[in-house]
Amino acid sequence: MKILMTADAVGGVWTYALELCRALSGHDVQIALATMGPPPTEAQRAQAQTIADLALHVSSYRLEWMDDPWRDVECAGEWLLELATRERVELVHLNGFAHAVLPWGKPVVVAAHSCVYSWWRAVHGVHPPSSWERYRRMVESGLAHAAAVVTPTHAFIRELRQSYTFEAPAHVISNARAPASFLRQGDRPKAPFIMASGRLWDEAKNLRVLDGLAARIEWPILVAGDVRSPDGRSVRIDALQCIGRRSEAGHARLLQRAAIFVHPARYEPFGLAVLEAAHAGCALVLSDIPTLRELWNDAAAFVDAADPHDIETTLCRLVEAPRERARLGQLARQRAATLSVSKMGEQYLGLYRELLHDSTRERSVA
Image 1 (cartoon, rainbow, N blue to C red):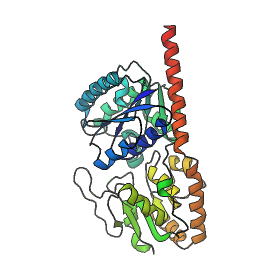
Image 2: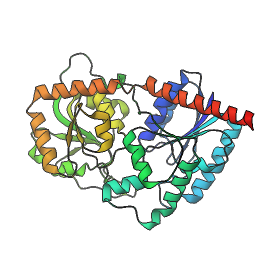
Image 3: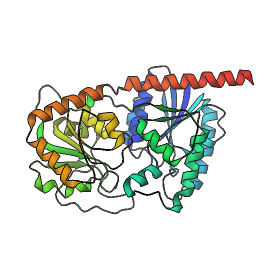
Image 4: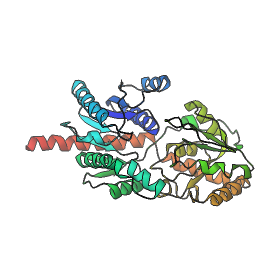
């Protein structure tokens, strides 16, 4: 089987795509991975080169959620169609929405990782302004043209249906991360610090709430991620220890040592950072939103993302409770083990085969 998969190198979609490509390559699946947006770094390109049967194709077309991207989206569509023809792919897996409307002539899977409308509602409590109406129409049209829509949680498919009307079958396939990089070596004990990660400038991550309470917590809170937004704005931080972006290996080493991982997000369709922390055996402190509750219920401490006092009280309680930290860390690790890369790959492969079978049957009937 040969498929065309789209991706971007901006955030978690890149990690998800490589994990899935690695899982699929073990099933005699060839993948043409086409990226848009900021090009992959040298380190990211090196990651892709380690995967058998993966050919990386790079462009710099603007992504559909960026400001005024539509000319680029159109050009990217022409490029993707030409690439699909040249590579003779049998199926298209889009990690975006708009390009599902193109005349592919083959089954199209839309994997939904996030969207501006659900993000805006979670962060601001209202629908986006009218300037985002064209985006809404493009996303809705893409969902309507998909042979199947995949989300990483049931909660997120419900969020999509609040914003868009579409009839394509919805499938829930959890994202996954290979655990080896995050597992602690030997019996090395956890260290007395709290870890968080994400873009500090992103209101959805809600990491700045930690700055207001960090000075009152006995342990330091380390935050890995960008302080400066893409448009150059910097976030003022007083009490957090901002350590910037880390390599994948460096980030994994921090998680191996961190006793607690806190994630106070207002919006999180899945959360690969949480999964990585769970593999590392961190005690998880998560915002009580439907997607995170679905994935980590009974395996984390939950807090109200809008209540700094609740977050502070929960963190202070765990700092003083080593047995509870150990219990939560063990539960998190056990839950993470159920979200395996092999299971993710097998579920996607089963969906691909089902769609190809249906497509072949439709052509034979016609």
